[in-house]
Length: 192
Image 1 (tube, one colour):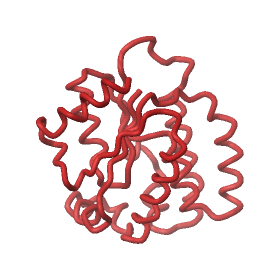
Image 2: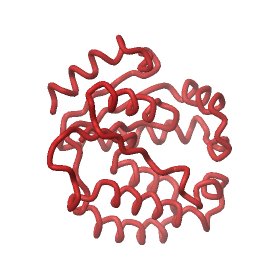
Image 3: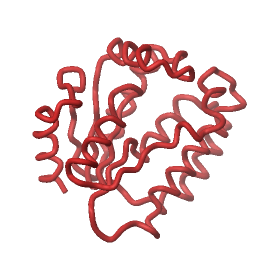
Image 4: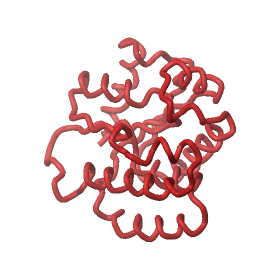
């Protein structure tokens, strides 16, 4: 499994879609549109944050469940299971975080681990421009400070990764272009 991680608007879904077609691979997308608590959580409603995070946790466990993992072929995800804990730590209060972590520890062993992590990186101001361009209402409250915190958290997570981590400056490289993706595809195949 190739998990693509990074801050909101770094290009995870776009890259995952291209990689799935080019490698070829099965594509698994994050279910942000199905999360009924997401908009309220992003709007700052504290009572929606824990349910929103648990929705993502259980959605990811269902998609990445080891018990029904395909025996062969490559799977590409536009998220990493690790990002769930990052958002929980940044968004939940102490009591909610303790409950979330208890549940996450119980289900963590059910998840198929990635063979490769692709970390997409860009400066917060670039991410904010992309967020504004795509116009998702629930993302309007994201700030440069929050995006910087997410970036720092990803750096900590990937430092402890048990698989190869491929860092990509998605501001310097336009990953929508096939010629820019060709080297990344080569590196991914080499790492698998």
